[in-house]
Image: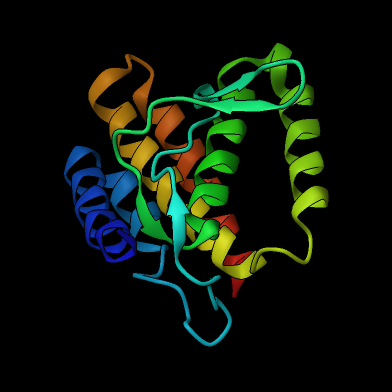
Length: 162
């Protein structure tokens, strides 16, 4: 599951390079994969695989998780990075939700501090942002601005991860 993320990330970057010359340079700023020395992932366990924010439900007494089609074994940082990327995208897409998205991100990071490798989370987050940028090129009328914003955040995440 983990290797698939990095293999697909190369495909997503290639798709962006083909879509627009400006995106080609932004996608080239992303390193091909994390530095393993700093991005030590947690031991493999059950992961959702595509834990987008829309896959979480508030059940009142705790969260519920739906859409388990891509579950498997992997590091918890994979699901954390995916979740954080999609929360960030919610704030990007709807300015009215940006502060709530930021609060959700900060709450999640505070609640998982010390449990996850922050560097690995940032790398997975960057990979998912790259995927989302590639998807928006195919689906959105305002794809160029949206794609650039997603790529800028992906680059910021990889720089923060080291």
